[in-house]
Image (cartoon, rainbow, N blue to C red; front, side):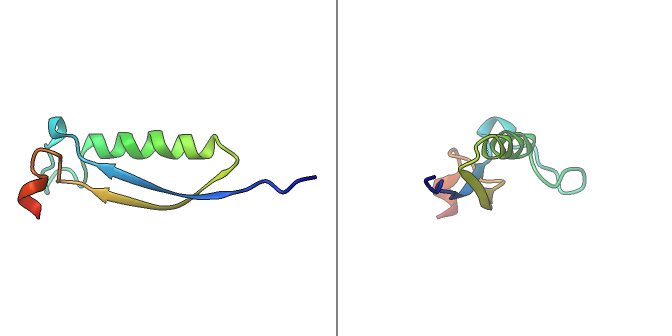
Length: 70
């Protein structure tokens, strides 16, 4: 039998410009980030050759305001 390769996988989640509604008193992260995390975790879990290594999140920064962050 041949050994199956397992790939460490990192998820990168980024805020959608349409979902910039984070309010520190009510929400700790956007719906977009939560949805992305759920979808991508399910993808990794459905593939035997992938193992979740880490999750990187840019919550609060979208493509619309990225230049300002630099």
